[in-house]
Length: 210
Ligand SMILES: Nc1ncnc2c1ncn2[C@@H]1O[C@H](COP(=O)(O)OP(=O)(O)OP(=O)(O)O)[C@@H](O)[C@H]1O
Image (tube, rainbow, N blue to C red; front, top):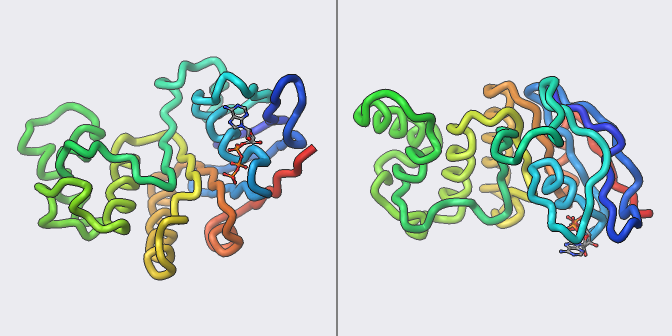
């Protein structure tokens, strides 16, 4: 469960948005919508501990009983998916997954598990390729899987479908929805797309500028 209490983004002592309060249960998605520049990405950055120093976050975020503000970013266990797939360009498809997978077990076992994950996202046989040798849709699926194998406690999705065409977008939506339900973790989706929000989210918040 992820609870947000009076979250706000502030620039030079001036709040940019009206405070938001919401809770997101495991397996569910909260969508944040609102005009460009209102502060949607900044809210996600505040949660993940990567907010630019020019901006300040206020309010409380509690993930499974732990206040995020009390944890350094690397201990928050948040998975982040963005518009541009986050993949190491010099690593193969398999290496990208193996890097993110929990350590332990034999190399052979780990490689076998990675292969199964690749099969789940239709990338079987592409283990040895570099990310640049994948299509946009394949990269998006690999970036999603790479985030999930790290077993995040919650997912932050910042316009993750906006680079995909209509059909791929539909496929990715379904994949993300199923993955969040299966991993049983809460997620926040930032989007400009009404359809994304309607199809995925159990709750939609329109951020209001002030
Ligand atoms: N480094 C910075 N210094 C000062 N202001 C910044 C900085 N980065 C972002 N901002 C401002 O913070 C506000 C919120 O930006 P943010 O990217 O969170 O908006 P957004 O709602 O995600 O926009 P979009 O929908 O266009 O992606 C904007 O007004 C932006 O100009």
